[in-house]
Amino acid sequence: MEQRQQVVKAFAARGVEPDAIVLGVTGTPGSGKSSLVARLTTHLLDHDHSLRIGVVAVDPSSHLSGGSLLGDRTRLRPSASSGRLFFRSQASATELGGLGPSSFQVCRLLAYLVDMVLVETVGVGQSEADVRHLADQVYLVLQPLGGDEVQFLKAGIIEVPHAFVLNKCDEPQAQQSLHHLQSSLWLARPFDTEPVPVFQTSAKTGQGIGELAEAMAATLHGAHPGIVGREPYFFERWVKDEWGRVGTAYLERSLGGSADCLVRSGGFEAAQRDFHDRLVASLTRAPVGAHP
Ligand SMILES: Nc1nc2c(ncn2[C@@H]2O[C@H](COP(=O)(O)OP(=O)(O)OP(=O)(O)O)[C@@H](O)[C@H]2O)c(=O)[nH]1
Ligand SMILES: [Mg+2]
Image (tube, rainbow, N blue to C red; front, side, top):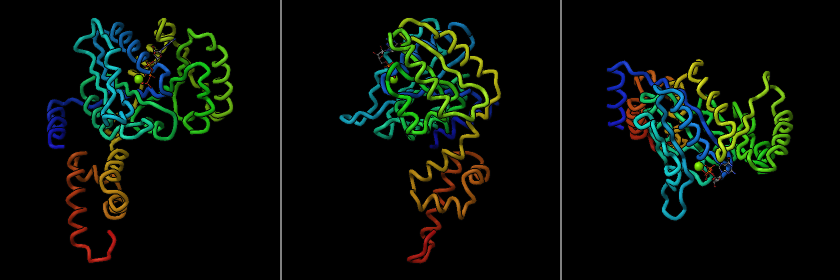
């Protein structure tokens, strides 16, 4: 925490802002997320010679070792892009995937260093919908006849993505799956004012990669809230992870919530330290049987 604070201070002293756009790439296991990310980063870096990209791949924790599978690193072979691509693979905290406890902190630091952060998370369900708290745009990757549309409808995640990517469109069932997906979208997202984009790609043949990469590159020029705006959510999550319900109740009732805490302390790490000190002080002062 100390080191992180020093890094953040050093950036601030140089006038560097954490203003990278964060794009989430999520979807079922094996749908081709890592292959797509490898293709997309190569395309993006080759077409913009000043662009810097950070990739954070959150792997499901290995049940055997408890560590990250770290398999995806091997797929990224940036050619002329050396020095402009940062790749980090990290273990996910949960069995299902979703964000790891440090995913936010890694993205936050990367947001100072690069122009675009791509976060790959695995799975279907609420924990994966988590990526919306971190990413400015979420891309949901599906594969032909995965039956994923039905699962996404059930899990409520179909409402989250800003765009859908039907990958493996080199496979014969791709067209049929596109129709399934489009009818599911029509049913599940009746309130979309504009039709949600559906990209058809093949990370194998390269089909559709240029179109998707261009859509991603276009997000660089749009307004986005920036990762600092995500701090209150992740501060609250940190409190919950570290201190459970007692912490959450103290944060809300005695400190006025996470946004107030962050402003009062003047930054994430300072707020973590202040919160710790205040909660410990309040617990040690509290009479026996009293609740914070
Ligand atoms: N035919 C075809 N196969 C693909 C395509 N994209 C990926 N694959 C294959 O699908 C398998 C899974 O690809 P990954 O890129 O590892 O998929 P992933 O979604 O990152 O997988 P996890 O991270 O394990 O969830 C690999 O065998 C890829 O070679 C594609 O567009 N077409
Ligand atoms: Mg992967």
